[in-house]
Length: 114
Length: 114
Image 1 (cartoon, each protein chain N blue to C red):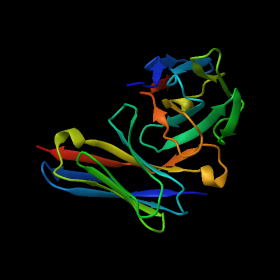
Image 2: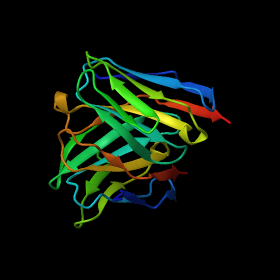
Image 3: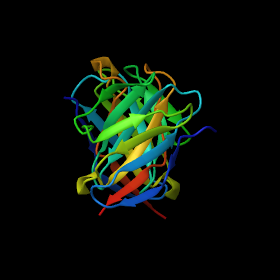
Image 4: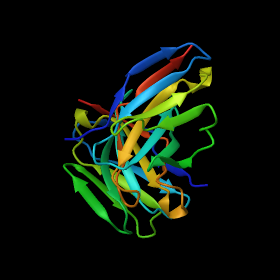
């Protein structure tokens, strides 16, 4: 069964460093998303992406964040200068269409900022 | 803004017992998703409901959406240790022109005692 994959599973970085989180969405899906979950808190929407453009972004998704689909399979989330409060589990999701379609989530990348 | 409240926040049941988890929305739901999350892992899609009064079942799990489309329940029959985890309801924000964004409840943590 097709699934969303994410790498790495765990990333440890120093505050101020750049990190890139990688995702491979399900192959025929067209819509891509990033969410995050700070330990003990709700899963929060960060950004949605379609046709090489951001469709929607939350207040959390500030200038420190960027997303890219560098090739036909990968979808990345970059944090330019990490802060302690960026420590969280980051989930990638994908769906085939925007309307009435299920978002399938990857296993997540646990980001720890020291 | 849209809010989803889940109840209870946590639940401990004896194996074989039935249980119900509720999800209440502050606004009419366009689509309501149920996901299961094991600690430190990704979200596993369970079911999606869209129509008022709709009910779906998969194995021993049944989800319902009320007629007013503001409340959903997830019912597990004859619980097993494999049902343990955190159950999340997620609301589809597309009707509010918020490009594919899902917002989530805080989760219900289920433990099943053998």
